[in-house]
Image (tube, rainbow, N blue to C red; front, side, top):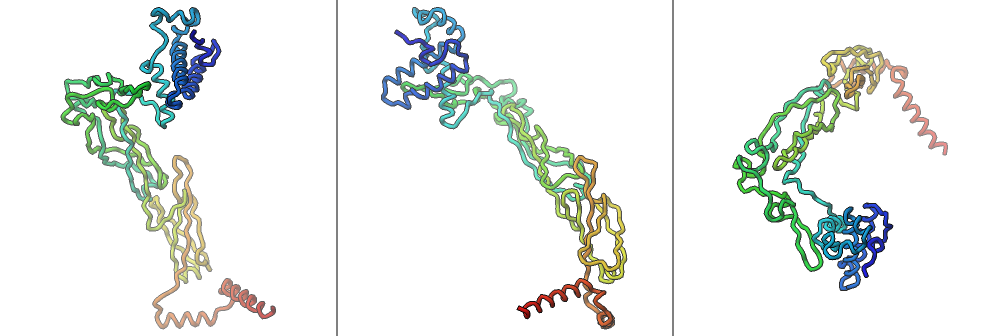
Length: 376
């Protein structure tokens, strides 16, 4: 006498499809002959589990079973409930279970259409261009959908035909003893279609390689390393499949005068010793093309910074603008004439500690430090 299908799967009579599938997966993993080689009882149990699941997962078969029990499938009723490995429902579960065990996933045929690859384009721009923004024209060698065959890969006037080996499924099933294993169709490589008369222009690929010109908008304030995505501008898909994307990676060239830190700019300006000592001024040209005068107060030291508010970089898609920091580099005179040397020597003789407070203070502290060793 056959066991109750619900008891075979270990579920209640009102179990839904999710519970049925979960119970079947667990039992199938436990009693599968591959895991129990040579065990006839496990093989028999596995067949019972399969028969029970094939019946209960089908709403019509389940309704008949709930009303009439096993008698519903006797004498040819409902075409029998003991589906074998070739049954489509079990094949789905088989693929779910053993596809996961093998680290793979289910692949569905899409008529041979494949998405095109994403492309990368490296672009270098100047700091001035990053400051003001620009519209750039780029030339990209890329695969485009073949206009001769409209991307189908078939010769104009013909169409791809259903693969005679897999009948359009993209997979073939090979039986080996108790098992039935699916694999990618070797005739159509999983596409489900074959092309008898390929397009002469694209050789059946559905795409051709050409150079095309694209317009790229680079916004003001863009930073080094920014990636711009142009959707659908990558490689064309195979046989009418969707195109990939084009990614533009921006690099900003080093500038002769300015260094960038976020929205702020830094510029080191050399000034003469006399300008630093006596005071004065100089002009700097900013990235917007204007000139700004910087006043140098008397006694300016090397490395002093002056902030020019709002003269830095714009912030991407924001109304703020950074600042420009000017750092002075006091230049020591070189190639002195005899008279210049005499004047500097005279200046040295007339100088006092008040003229060089930093150096006087440093050496005074250094002297105290040295004397401390003698007291130990």
